Structure formats: C-alpha cells, structure tokens
Figure 1: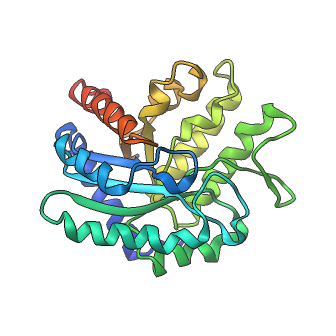
Figure 2: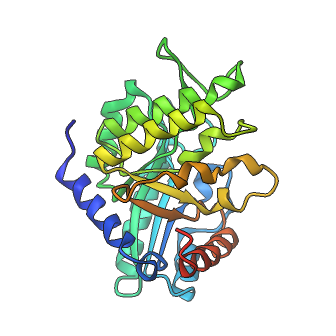
Length: 266
C-alpha cells in the first residue's frame, strides 16, 4: 500500500491532536456548509467567527464532495468545488494568526473513482480527505444507499471502509460505528466487523472519528455503539468530530466535545 508524504504529514498532525485532551479540545473537526444541500445557509466566515469566539485554535471544513457528473444528491455540485476551495483559501489568509483553517472534503469510497480521489487531494491540495461511507458496495461492483436486505448493510459498509483505508488516500474515517445503525443488539457479526475495521486502522494509520452527533443522538439511539470503541488498542488514533451542519450545531457539539475531553471521555 502506498501512502504519500502528504498523507503522513496529515496523520502526524492528528497524532499531535491526540496527545492530550487540552490539545484535542481546541480543534473543531468535521464541519459542513450550505453547498451540501442539507445544512444551514450560513457562510464559512460565520462558522470561523464563532469558532474564534469559542476559543478554538483550528477549524476543519469537510463538506460533502461532488462526484463527476453530479451523480448523487445531498452534496455540493461539481461546479461549486472550485468556489468552495477558493473561498476557504481566501479565509485562511484573512484569519491568519487568529485561527488555523483546514480545507477538506467528505466522500464515500467507490473503487472506480480511485483516480478522482487522487485528483481531489493533489489538484485542490486538500488538508483532509474524510471517508464517510454512506454507500453499500455490492459484490458486482454496484453501490446503493438503500439495500433491499437491511440486515446486510453493516457488512457492505464495513467492506467499503476497509477498502477505502487500504487505498492510502483517506486520512480519517467518519463515524465508523454508524455502520451498525440497523442493529438492535451487539452480535457476533458486529464484533467481527469491528475487529476488521480496527485492525485496518491500526496498520494503515488512518484515524477513526468519534462523532459527537452520533454520541448524543436521542431519536436514533443505535447510531452510536460504545462496544465498538471499548476494544480500541492504544495504537489506533482517534479524533472528535462535531459533524456540524449549522453554526448552532457546531457550537452545541463543540461544547459537548469540551465536556467529554475534560472528563477524559475520549
């Protein structure tokens, strides 16, 4: 497996953030914006200004990336990608010395788009490529949001996550425990799929995200399984993600993150 120097540098940055709660507490990671079509209409500068007010030292934008041909919904259009990156590059300079701003994208792993992922990282010089596996990859190479047999979902999502990590192109996996959202109990399959993801994270160095939105979700209580995290080894890197789709959600989840960090709930 090939991992670029750039990818290793990003990993080193996240490792620094894992050194202690005090450091981790100052990063706002996993922020979405209006272009993804399912977030608030606030602009990036509003998120940044509020992050500064909150005392954050760093904010990481990871809006949902487009696919060629705009083949999927609930994400920015391909025509918006240049504006998204350009806006954040300008804001990096505007807020230099006040807060560090990282430009990233969240996207699903589909093997046929491997060259496109490389283009995203190299052409747009992303700081983070976040693997958010919402598609189930089927044996015939097709993919779907909505499996006919819901009980198979965790298996297919786990396969996609492992393959994405093995590609060497992704820096962080978003909400890995969310693949078990349809599970009513923690069963043998859950244990085995968790083991596969953790083992892959350990040997690739890809970071796993503890998603604040999942942790405190009340309506869909099976989005977050503590059992997934209990078996983590010390070699696996973890980062909090606020998964914010509005400024208000960012504020709420960042405060929860601070509470967890102060209580060593990492």
